[in-house]
Image (cartoon, rainbow, N blue to C red; front, side):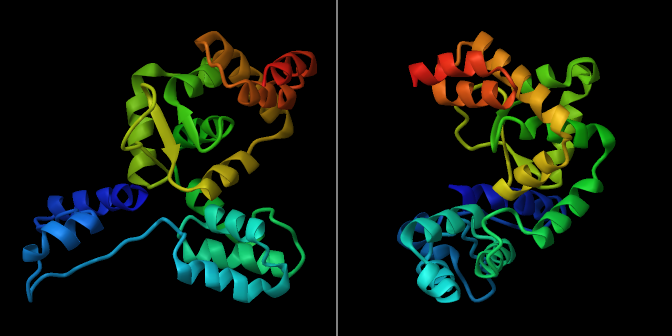
Length: 239
């Protein structure tokens, strides 16, 4: 799952440094690989589900009476197991600031993204138009004249190495990629101007339509945000 995928960059770097590192799913370790543990074994447990009883209890205790099931579920999903992100999201709700991405989280993530190369940032901002999961082909379509196919692999490698995006374990379509965390996608999207967002959603909708995408709601929302209300209504009717 997501926790297993999250360990891949660390395991790869450890192996490159000559350190024996093995990635094992929790169920496999508990039921079939206990013999792999010894007195000299350093066991690192990673959970990115963000849905543990401890996480839910933390949110409920912090919000008190405002912790209805729907609010708790949304916050836990957005936090995705990142303790700092979750704490700041809860703090914003408790302060009556709603569920917008807190300035503290936004500033931290944007500072991290600012360290990327200009081309990688441009690719990432265009990708944010599609949401957390996107296609590299779709992003190149949005980049237009700035798209350089020969450098696509370079841009993707940089973003993967910096843990900004990842390659899903089971991709639904060729070239599928995903932001490492939903809040990274939100931070990248916030870096776009309003005009860029409008144009980006229009181009994204037209590209998805040409590709034969049948998700009416997704197409309608892109057309609506892209200022194409007439075309959006047509897709909303099909939803």
